[in-house]
Image (tube, rainbow, N blue to C red):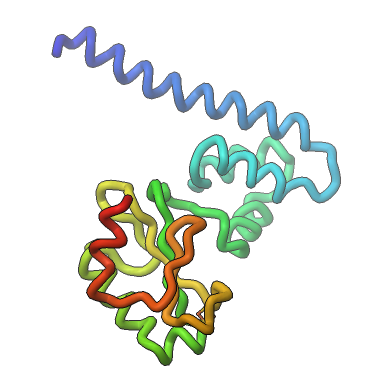
Length: 167
Ligand code: FES
């Protein structure tokens, strides 16, 4: 690849980021004067950018004329806001009481091995973000887990690789 081509690729990546920041600036301008709109702005920003790194939180704080501590406080309080890039799919293993006593922890341990990532992390290929949940409403068929919106019931740790292969 020539230097010129490399330079062009860098410019394109910067350009994409700039486009996202421009869209976020529009969101901020639209909601700035609406009472209690910070969560809405953060939601929309996350849907545009994918996650909410500190630089972006600063950008929002300045745009909304709010202290950074307020913006960061909301981001860290709600679990649906992410400060790191997320995987294409989200795995949530239930560790509520019913699932825990029926082997939920074994599912977590096996997934940590298969995915080579700890709970809360994202796989190196950015395919899966791995989390735990308190209860996903399938207690009668514990242990349970979810991948995106699909609930898997009576999960057997030996079947996990087959389940993940669908993704
Ligand atoms: S405790 Fe796991 S689904 Fe309810």
